[in-house]
Image 1 (cartoon, rainbow, N blue to C red):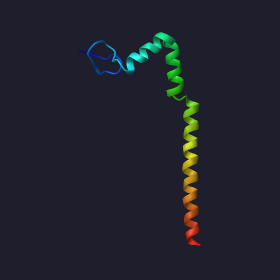
Image 2 (cartoon, rainbow, N blue to C red):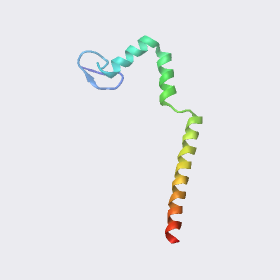
Image 3 (spheres, helix red, strand yellow):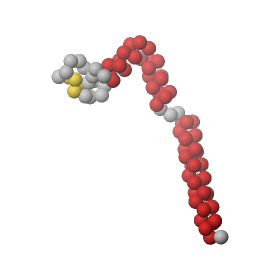
Image 4 (cartoon, rainbow, N blue to C red):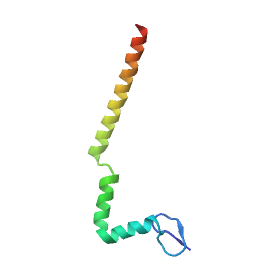
Length: 78
């Protein structure tokens, strides 16, 4: 028995589990380590600019929701 080198799941035949991790290895062999790493970083990891945009977007949503709640309270008082 082996432990998968990538995810740690117990494997019976090889050091990479047959499902997902072996597929990742195949992609690395096909496209190269640099390309796969670049795609993963581009898709999965946000840059500082993206994080700031997301933060501003979240704050704007919260502000607009609080304004809607405030308007509903004012309408009930009328």
